Length: 181
Image (cartoon, rainbow, N blue to C red):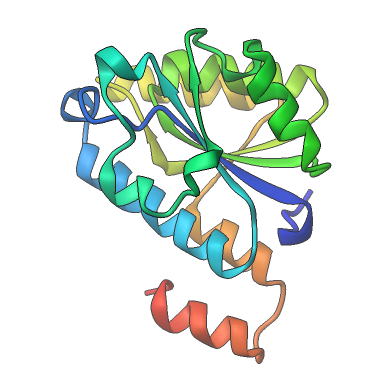
């Protein structure tokens, strides 16, 4: 299945200030997540973020938080975002069935959220450059498990080209000049 911008939303999971320094290749993960968020915003794809216990782990990284409406940053205590009724209902209200997942940690909150999203019937796409864990091994194990469960593991460029669908449009020119290098 291909992604469609009109059927997609983005869920950024727990890219938080106190956790980020411990993430393997954190800067690269943060930059990839920002890239996806900026493309999503240009294509009017709704963006949501979660924060795991922000009193202890901190807020969403500032460079990412500025790309997400404050009302769409949702706090949670469960590792799976979908175990929080207010998050599950916020996503359901969009009536979109494709969810692009970014964030940390791949083997904990991302994995558990993806498993629950799949169980609820969503088509789930995990952007490989935009998820991370404290170790590369945990990230790779999580990606493998999510894929075996039915999630699509994709690159950020796969995402952009699927959302764009064709070249020759003003939107394609803007995104290809600004984001696809």
